[in-house]
Image (cartoon, rainbow, N blue to C red; front, side, top):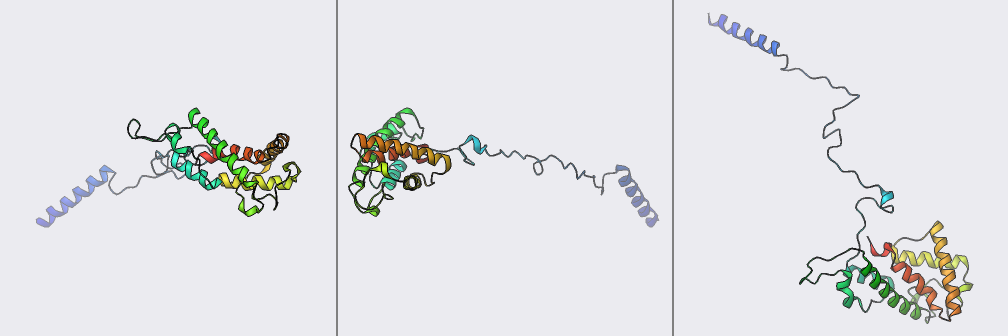
Length: 222
């Protein structure tokens, strides 16, 4: 009797499973169109910005140097500090932690004005000192110019001008000028050299390049 009752219960359980139609069955998946879930779909991932909209940069947008970083970069690139950096630090964005508790890294007009003043100070001083040196390796900005006393810069060959520009752009930006941009900068130097000889201030041709590269966004951002 017990055996018959047990068999009846097993039969009823099997029938119930068959009627539900869900236990132990697999739902077919169309492999041509996988489900749009977090694994196969976008998954909430934000795509990287278009490099063409960020001057060729991939990932985050560029950030301006802090005052301390700017001072270190000037010292590294020119071998001497900007003497008025500390007195201009607040205007350049440094926090005083009295009224301002966060450093500003916004490239505004005030920053641009004071930086231009600083670039003129250090670049003119460095270029003037360089042209007094006769040993090329002792120079900072004019290191690629020929040994001995620096002569008329208008007489430099195109190859010498380009070598100077590649050296300076690598020194200031960590990346050399090339192609059409290198040609444009060569034209700038040629004009600067002509004017420098006219006013009898040869060092200003080198200073012009220094100022232009130091105030370029490639020197100020990372």
